Amino acid sequence: METFLFLFEMLGTIAFAASGAVLGVRKGLDVFGVCFLGLTTACGGGMVRDVLLGNTPPAAFQNPTASAVAVVTSLIMFLSGVRHLLMGNQRRYDLFMLLMDSAGLGIFTVMGVRVVWNCVEAPSLYLLVFVGVLTGVGGGLLRDVMAGDMPYIFVKHIYACASLVGAVICGVLRQPAGEMTAMLAGAAAVFAIRCLSAHYRWNLPHPNA
Amino acid sequence: METFLFLFEMLGTIAFAASGAVLGVRKGLDVFGVCFLGLTTACGGGMVRDVLLGNTPPAAFQNPTASAVAVVTSLIMFLSGVRHLLMGNQRRYDLFMLLMDSAGLGIFTVMGVRVVWNCVEAPSLYLLVFVGVLTGVGGGLLRDVMAGDMPYIFVKHIYACASLVGAVICGVLRQPAGEMTAMLAGAAAVFAIRCLSAHYRWNLPHPNA
Amino acid sequence: METFLFLFEMLGTIAFAASGAVLGVRKGLDVFGVCFLGLTTACGGGMVRDVLLGNTPPAAFQNPTASAVAVVTSLIMFLSGVRHLLMGNQRRYDLFMLLMDSAGLGIFTVMGVRVVWNCVEAPSLYLLVFVGVLTGVGGGLLRDVMAGDMPYIFVKHIYACASLVGAVICGVLRQPAGEMTAMLAGAAAVFAIRCLSAHYRWNLPHPNA
Image (cartoon, rainbow over all chains, first blue to last red; front, side, top):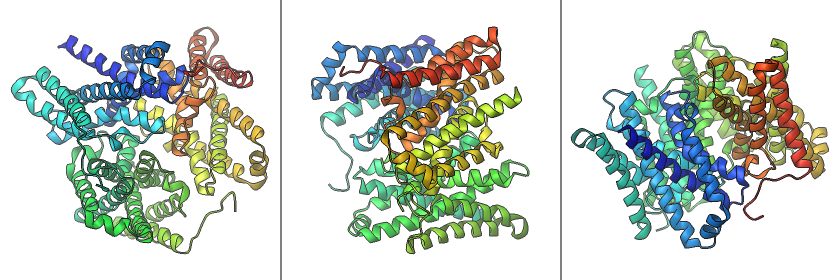
């Protein structure tokens, strides 16, 4: 379980850091800016969550592993080969961002749910979902606001909605199926919903539609 | 008093949620984005305040009523009848935003003052005003930054100033007039100042003036 | 030591408040907006730090001195003489912003390091640097995001990097040289690196370079 959680968190960190770093590269930031944006995206959601739950100082402060992984990931995104691969082709860039961002969203959503399990006794489903969604979308929100973009959450197909569904699945499955299965199922659901919605261009109703 | 506080908070929540949702509709967000922006505007100021005062987890996490009210309000704003009513006419849109935002500003300012009364003994007027203004302007600030607009607080006639005056009135009146009167007077003052300043186009000195 | 810390903090507050206020003037904000942006820049980094470390309510709430200094500084920046001096000439404006922002960055970085010394026993260098950089860059980041600009940290020569070097110097020098010397050396290093990098147009590698 320990190992699973560690690997799971690293995967989410790498995915979110990559999405932040690639956005930074696209915005023409220098190497430090790219790392900073990668780091913020990867650690931002968790920090917001810890502060809101009163778990201060946040986990990211006490343990440099996730930060180090995020910085190394950002540096790799900055390498000229990787840059050319992703920037030369709009479709490839969009696909990469979709996959990374969706993986991060799914993993951090269920990690948020898990933190509530750990620090609140008999939490309501409302609390689980609230904290899960916030942890999931927080990093991407910070990334987009700092980079001066309209947040993904407002413009992309089914975004926070996917996180919400994943948090509910994770919350509901814990009792019957165990923590690990619940987390994997929740994260997989988020990832699948995001990819399907992007592929089939599902959209929630728009005012102009 | 209990009932009064509850109704008062609901009124503020509805007003701020409506202002956030209508801005979301104007920006062309989908239904989830509109709800999310409404929710953030309504709960944002209180969450910032609770985090700063160390009251974690914030009240919004423990009690879903305000969140539910904010989401329902946002959904109503999204209904096509309401949308056409507000979007078809710039003056009507501006008036609606002014009324909703001013009501929310007034109510949340005095709610912020009240939280300090409750959790700090013999607070200074400075602390009362600081927290009151922060609670009042916090939600709108988050709304505008996330929607990519220049915050209201920077461009509108007498905005934070109104909140400041209301917080002072509320803080000063408590001793002689009682909590409820002080809160009503403070909120009414904010609302009145905002509306009068918009109507008579009062402005604070501008650099270019 | 007490006096030194007080003067040091005031100097940082004035510098950051001036940078925020001048940006506000340039954006055409009214007098309250200018003060609010000055106040946010001066107190923002420290508030973010205190919240993250769980030192709530933040120091800025309990002691109005720094806030008062920030507001007075902002008002001075708003005076028409000062405004014309700075706005009439792009080079003078850039130089002023560079000096103020760099002084604030240096001072708040080492103040952040100092807070960790005070409230954590035997802190790791990682924690010192993390909190130092966050305190240093936090105020400017809030300033730029609220004013709708791309944050300085992303576009300017060697910004967070300077803060990082200063935090390391400050953290390493404490044992051999004493707190005061360490703080002065750290702040001076940040200031020097920023000015040198601006003058010689040092840049970290850019993707397009």
